Length: 257
Image 1 (cartoon, rainbow, N blue to C red):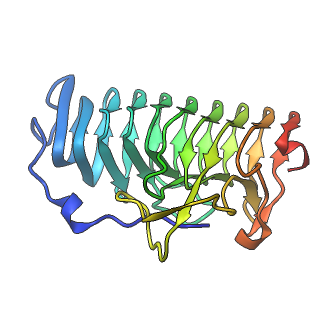
Image 2 (cartoon, rainbow, N blue to C red):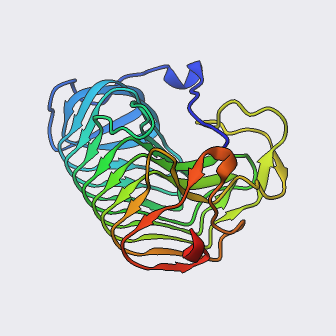
C-alpha cells in the first residue's frame, strides 16, 4: 500500500486563526493558519494546521478546496465534520496500527466530493460517509484505518489512486461501491498528503483493500457491501491483509472477503 503522511514545510506557514486561542464564540475561521485550544464551530479555508490539542465545540467545516492538517495533536469535535468539494481532511494517525488514538468526533463525518480523506486511529460516534470526489490528475490515497465508527462506514464513487478500509471497527454497515483506481504513481511516491504524487494512467493494483490485519481484525457488526469497484474489493496478503469479521451478510464483491 502506498503511504501517506508527509506535509510540506510551506503548508505549515501560519497567518493565525481568526479569534483568540480560547473559546471565542460560536463561529470562527481558520484561513491559511494554525489552530489549537478550545473554539466554537470552525470553518477551514485554505490550509489549517493543528499545532496543539484542539477542541471544536460545534461543527468543523472544510470549505471547498481546503486542507485540514490534523495529524498528531489530540482533536475533539463535539458536532459533525463536513468536508467540501476538493477538500482534504487529515485526522488522527497518532497511534500504533490497531490502537485507538485520542481523536474523537461526537457526530458524523460527511464528505461531498472530497479530494481525499486520511482518517486513522480515531473514534467517530456517528457515521462516516463520503460521496464522489477524487482526481485523476495526481496520485492520492484515501486511507480509512484503525478507527472505531459507531454508525455506518460508506464510501461511494471516489476516483483516484489508492483507497482502502483496513482494521476498522464498524457498528453498522460497511458499504464501498463504485470507487475507481484510475492512476498509479509515476515513479517514487513517499507521501501523498497534501500535494499528491505524479500520476501515470492505469489502475493501482493494490487499491480497494477491504481487510483486517492478521493481528488487527476489521469487525463489521452489520453488513459488508461492495459493488462496482475498480479493482474489485480485495484482501491483499502482500500488505498483511486478512479476512474481515462480519456479523451480518457479505454482499457483492465482498462475498468472499
